[in-house]
Amino acid sequence: MSYNMHLRDLIFINNKRSIPSEEGIDHSLKLLKEGYQFILNRRYTMDANIFETKLLGETAICLTGSEMAELFYDTDKFKREGAAPKPVQKTLFGEGGVQSLDGEAHHHRKAMFMRVMKPDDLQTIRRLFAKHWQKDARAWEQQDEIQLYEKVKTVLFKAACEWTGVPLEENPEDRADQISEMFETPAHIGIRHLKGWKARSDAEKWMASYVEEVRNGERSDAAGTPLEAFSLHRDHHGELLDAETAAVELLNLIRPITAISVYVAFAALALHEYPEEAAKLQSEEARERFVQEVRRYYPFFPFTAARVKQDFTMGEHTFKEGTLALLDLYGTNHHPDEWENPGRFQPSRFEGWQGTPFQFIPQGGGEFDFGHRCAGEWMTVELLKESVLQLQEHLSYDLPEQNLSFSLTTIPTIPESGIVLKNVQPV
Image 1 (cartoon, rainbow, N blue to C red):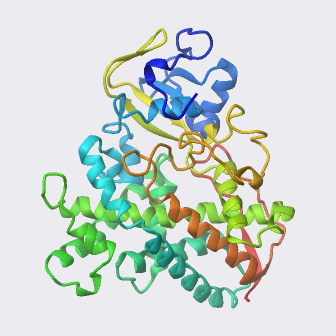
Image 2 (image 1 turned 180 degrees about the vertical axis):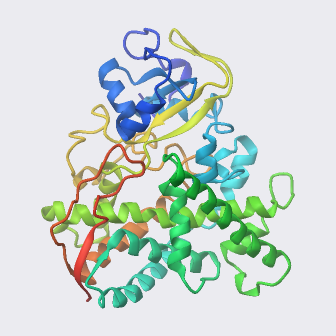
Image 3 (image 1 turned 30 degrees about the horizontal axis):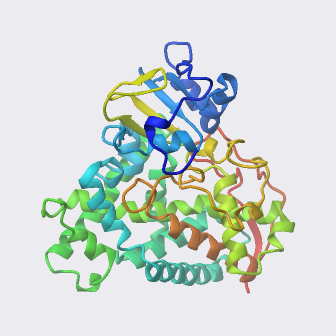
């Protein structure tokens, strides 16, 4: 089906039969137990790219594959307002952020993000990331061993702060840990989730203080930075964002950059597990193919959410206004109809790749400028390419025996050991 298909031409698979429905009262516990494979498992058993289930006491429509992704990102049919569960808002996204907006409000706010994602901006933060990596690597040399995931979180956080214009504090490791609680805890319950909730609240207060200082003329050093741009941004009605919302959006720069540490851990794992592919990384183009395959092959976040904007009919099924919809990110990136040998790590698949914005969706799909595709996707690719370059050409280390497996039930997941390195030496 073409990328620019008309939804009226979208005929539900399986001979127009109505959407299959999972039996049972509620399957929220199964989602927590099955994690990344919740939608994937049911796609196999129901032989369908769309099905209904019950989550948190309500009907949810689960979608997978590029055709369903294109449907999901039709803003005439689905909206983001009210889609993210409260626990996710209170930890991962923050309330009032760009992810929860629709229509003109979303387009205007998204443009604020895209203005700081120009090629020069991406190269600037890449240089800052390399600078902080190489500086911290000199300290790693003094340690018997390091856990790469934890160390890179701090490196990314420091680069993010310097790039955005947010002052670095004396102990950046502590603040990096606070930021990481936001993306490590949304799917947890109990005490761990409450830690993420508190981390979000404390970080927003921290960031709002800098917003106020910019607005009061107390931070001349922020001139030309995202801190200044976001603090002084006016919405589509011409009004300044309240300080709390501006703080949420600044954290929507710093938090996702810090979260790239998940991908860095998987990139290091791929370099170790696929040495024949690592040996090919002699150019930027080769590194880009490699990191794109890291983003496709390894799990990041399992799905994204929306709600039906207004009643509409597809095939024999009517989508009811307000119904929750989940798009399977991990499953779409491993869908056998979308990818040849999806279970194989194969960077060459991205050589001359001409897929659609709905086929390769590790950080969401759709268009950048007006859709809900992650504004930081290009930055993720640049920073991952730099991390691979640093690991291969600027760092000598041993990888001792350790547990390199990762769980598909823990969200988000990383290799169990966090990638332990010994005898680390900058090169």
